[in-house]
Image (cartoon, rainbow, N blue to C red; front, side):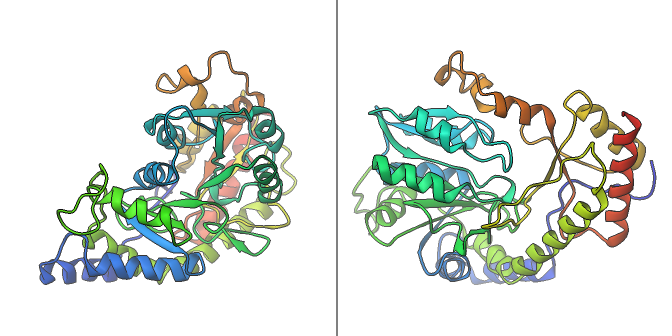
Length: 370
């Protein structure tokens, strides 16, 4: 193994984040308080043009509460991709509704419009596309289908902070959107999530549901949860908001360098970007020969000291937890992606020498298997 190991992802927590946590600890107000309120307002202005924004303790909580607040429940169906993290389907199932898994299109790993259209039934209430790896879903086509059938769009924007489609920011495209603030996302609060939506009933319902069903203390209006964000986490997130744009630009530069480095290597299919899309490269995900992918991943780690990730090796419709919703389902593009994808380091901590190492190593191990 050569030089220092290059991890697939690397959270960036600096002195400013530590100082922000210390400030909250000294204040004595640690639970949901002024830091959370400020973080909600700043996140809203930064990413979603002033949309209502509600902070919660995780992205999954945000997705779950958003669906409940939008009226999704038993007897309903929500169309979701199978090629994503299980939280997408889980959040639907947790409401009592049925996640309906459909295939992806091959270029950007997002929901196939044709598959969505074919899956609509009288019970369908919404479509939950994922902006996977930081690339927006095919907004124009999915919106047209939703409008034609009177369906809501619920955005899974867990990986897409700052992404956009034709100038429209991710997080402003549906009835609500969920952003994750997990440590390895493009920005973090240590743990947490943000839900964005238009001001009105959905926003108020989410605020009620996150706080035991009450807006006024002890005046519980509905049965709710405790999914509040702490001021400690919000303070970290507020600092990260001041840095995320520079990190995104670095991710985009790193992706461009990797693209250039793999030009001419027919064994590597680099990430595709739609003309209307701004990709924020939560992951830099290539396609490889499915028979060679796992060998290449091991070789990168063992021979070159380079980490990578396979997101996602088991499609949701084949997970033991979710397969009951999809008996006998055949999703060929999802299965192909699960065999072929490999995510390489693209995080902003990479130095120019790291990028050179990654390019050289990938070119060497892919050509070695040819």
